[in-house]
Image (cartoon, rainbow, N blue to C red; front, side):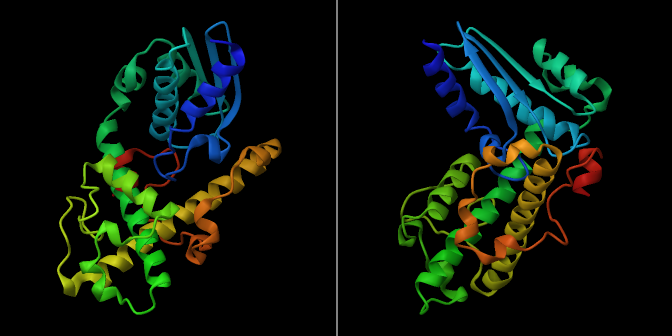
Amino acid sequence: MRPARLRAAARAALGTVYDPELDEPITDLGFVSSLTADDGHVTVHLRLPTSFCAPNFAYLMASDAKDALTALPGAREVTVLLDDHHDSDLINRGLAADAGYRGTFGHEAEEDLEELREIFRRKAHAAAMERALTTLLRARPDLTEEQLGDVVLGDLPDTAPTRALLRRRAALGLGTAPTDPALVDDGGRPFPPGEIPLRLRFARSVQISIDGNAHFCRGLLRTRYPDSAPDQAPRACDSGNPASAAPAAHSTAPARDGRTTKEKIA
């Protein structure tokens, strides 16, 4: 594969790697600082908003980036390097050796990364569900929150929030058929009618938390790396959801610091 085509394919592959908390591609967030591809050798440097972002988050993104690039047909050798993090050396050695999470962090790797992924998939689904249903409520003033229990996926307009919801449902293994109910819990079960307003408010709090953290982390990255601003793509949800600009005063997502996952989730 020619270098230009491999670089384009590598960039597209990195666009499938999401920050687990912010639920956005690392390419849109500006976390990819450089990408080179030549003669089948792909090298990527990643950067984060602070040097003390949680090591499990950092490893998750770097490992997912390497997996995505390794799967490319034209990539014969892949190197992913995390820069300017307090655990950069440890993470980079682990990635180079394909040591895995527990092999990289040893006794410090108390938590299960797949369990962590599932926590954030559920949060991303709740936020996406809120965005899609709020979009529907704005488009149909006659529809009340209490009536959302009767809404099925086929009732949702073909918009970015709807497509995002379908992706999040698929990631959780939930149904994506047009006849499936739109407002469901993490197991795909509809809520009792009396609980719908409360459940929607909870989903809205998760959505505001994720969006607030995304704004905050984007700003921190631009402060730390002033040249990163052009690498950050506009957030699609900002134009259609005023609540997305609200700060996350009481975040429902784990904090992006160096605490253990158990401490962050508690």
